[in-house]
Structures are given as structure tokens and as C-alpha cells.
Image 1 (cartoon, one colour):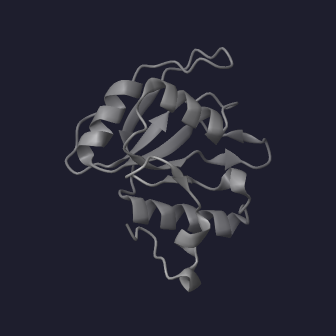
Image 2 (cartoon, helix red, strand yellow):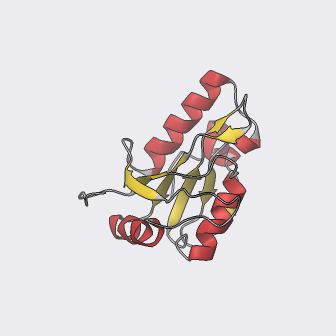
Length: 147
């Protein structure tokens, strides 16, 4: 993938379809490339109960996104004996807030609101996963991308 200015969100391609979002996260953590990730979303086919072969990863800075791509590009994930090799490209939608809004809009449209369909969101300061609900609930006084 070519380097583009200002890219923080990348599409991670060639993910074996049996990977869940949690297994993908574990694989990326094992590679040591999730310390500046604030969003991970692995779309699922609800009928087949498997992923679509790609994920969206938003990083805190363009430099972090470039470093993430450098680590994962060309890697074969170890589970399920797949010959697929990971690749990356800039995502069409860029930035944490815009991605979260787009994902949730699509999930609501398809009525796929179960936790397995939702993106994983992380506090960039601590790298810990944070609950998605407060980010989506206007009554909680929190907006998407509030930090």
C-alpha cells in the first residue's frame, strides 16, 4: 500500500474468515502493534457466522498507522492454518469519530447490535478497552470522539 498523508485508519485485508474480533485482537497484540490503536472493527456475516476477510483499524496518529502497517503487512496469522498473508490499505473513512459513526449506522440498519458485531474501542492513553455504550448514548453526555 502506498503511503498517504494523514491516514489514521487502515483496512487490514486477507484475514482468515474463522477469526473472531477477539482472536484478531490477540494476534495483533502478540505482534506488538496495538499500543496506539483506538478502534478495531471486524465486520461479520451474520448468516455464516464468520468475518468478511477484512477489518478496520484506527490509530491515534498517522505515524502510528504507518508503523502498524509496517508490522502487519506480509504476516500470516497463526491460527486455523491459512495461507492468507495480511495486507493493508488506507480506509475510505478516516478518523475515530467518523468510523464509529459509520459502523454504528450500518449495524443499526442491519439490526446487528449484539456485542460480537460491535467495534472494539480503546482508550489511547491506557490501551485498555472501554465500553462502547457511553460513547453512543447522548444522555450520558459523551460524544463520539470526546477524547
